[in-house]
Length: 106
Image 1 (tube, one colour):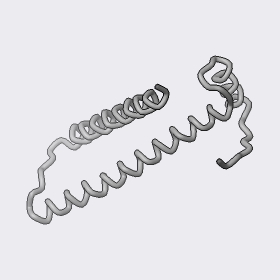
Image 2 (cartoon, helix red, strand yellow):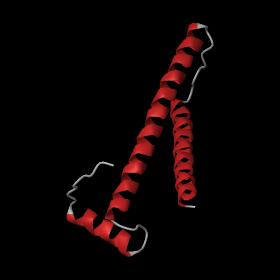
Image 3 (cartoon, helix red, strand yellow):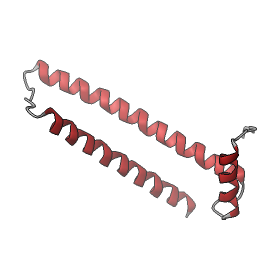
Image 4 (tube, one colour):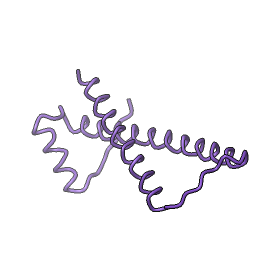
């Protein structure tokens, strides 16, 4: 396992210390490992979302090429619908991450 020295701003250092003092983590290294794991998990999810987005765009282009496009008359409502769907997916990913972490803790 690699070892790192990390300099944290005072507020983050205090947060790490509080997490350890509260018993949420065994030590500062565990707090930082958890943060890096969460960041990696989210980065992996973002990469998967971007890959899926590119696939969907290509599907849409292919559909347009075949004359299968749809007419959007209310762009604001259409964008809101898409935004709501994205927010729901993010909430589901956060819940999946929490369940993933809870499973590892058990």
